[in-house]
Amino acid sequence: MKSLLTTLFMCLFLSASMIAQTRYIDPVFDKVKVTDGAVYGVNATLLYFAQVQQAVPEALVMDVYEPEGDTETERPLILYLHTGNFLPFVNPATGEPGLNGSCGGSRKDSAAVEFCTRLAKMGYVVASCDYRLGWDPQNSEQLIRRFTIINAAYRGVQDVRTAIRFFRKDAALNNNTYDVDTTRITVWGQGTGGYVSYAAATLDNYLKIPTASSDPGKFLWQPPGAPGIIPMVIESVNGDIYGTSVGTTTTNPGTPLDTLCYPNHVGYSSEFNLMVNMGGALADSSWVDPGTMPIISYQVPTDPFAPYTEGILKVPGTNELIVEVQGAYVVQQMQDDFNNNDVFANTGLTLDLTAEQQSAFARSPAGLQSVSAGLYPFVRSSPFDSAPWEWSDVVPNNPTCNTGAAGKAKALAHIDTTIRFFAPRACYALGIQPCIDAIVSAKEPLAPASIQVTLAPNPAIDVVRISVDADKTIRDIQVIDAMGRIVRDLPGINNSNYNLQRNGLAKGNYVVKLRLDEGVIAKVLRME
Image (cartoon, rainbow, N blue to C red; front, side, top):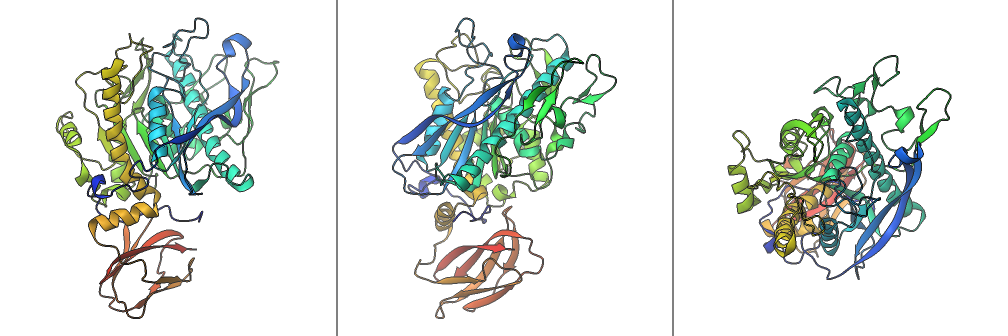
């Protein structure tokens, strides 16, 4: 059913090896099928502005990976965003790769294909999305570089939200072409895609851009010919933060208006449930709030292109300054401070750190040894080894690219670790029932499926009657909210039924965990 939970309950993940062949933990499918080049929207790109002097409409496309032979009709969805410095990978004039200074830059990148394939084999539907490119990294003025990159990132946020709405609209109107569960959506950004996923997870109000608190003037400027200071992003010009309104501008008085944003799939929600970043950084730490969704972060602490703590973003290749940003360590500490990642920490997931991760924390710079349950630092010996999950044989002169058989093997090993760290946390954050059952059974036995449990009414408004078979006994009850917090702990029930009073429980989904003599049972409760 579509409206299951966006929650989980708190229990210790011992190891993936103890949960043999569990969907969303293990690769339970041998093959995937890929729908290549599916169009999820159309919007205005400035990539060709130098040639045509205007924004032009561009199809937004994706490759959709699905587990082959799957009979499930509601699978969690992952939107995967590739790397590439917001620039094309291939030089259109010469056909040479590496124009953007990166190891890749499209949904066809080796690492992107590998991640999407693995995740689909685990049972997910994965959409590898291209997004609009284009900014001015070679401009001599830092403010122009900053202006163009914040606008590029803004367009990326609009595009990922457009893709989310595409799937919700497709599910509502087209019989759910890809059999997705639109209540369980993850946005996963790699490299430059990490900048987009960070912003998509935290930019829930346009005013966060002109009022960025770490530097009040960060995204304000006075462009040539303007009478005063204005924001670098303006909703009437660039479209709203969702890409659901028209944005128009004119560069000179008397010239026609140029459309910068076309609405797509208006009326459908852009919300998602979990964010993953591999590299990248957050435009401003003030965008993280209490209630920000759970975040899983992977980063190399010595990454020269994206600061692990806080630093100035630089143009790859020239090292020209752009803007101060915050990296995974700062973001994850804020997530911990706001209890946003309690869904991970309260489950004891810090205890499943691999030897590599423990070593990485031990070798982190002084003061950065604290363990955040959503953070995995890949400590590397070379500062240029900033994306150890990538490989490429087409740009061998780039020191950041793993090349050859050894480079690919190294990248695949890091992808193994990345997936292993992601899998149980995603199960918790997305509230996936098969994962819940498997993880609970790894800690304590599940009660037999033959025991009948009733929650009535469900959805509920005031009182919920919790009942089991008359010859069974409920010993304890826990109610767990969407952040993984125990909001009711009721020991000593010792009866076959119990009336759970609402008493301030907010509207939303909860997990009701019952402990019986025969084992544990978990059921989803909806409070209206």
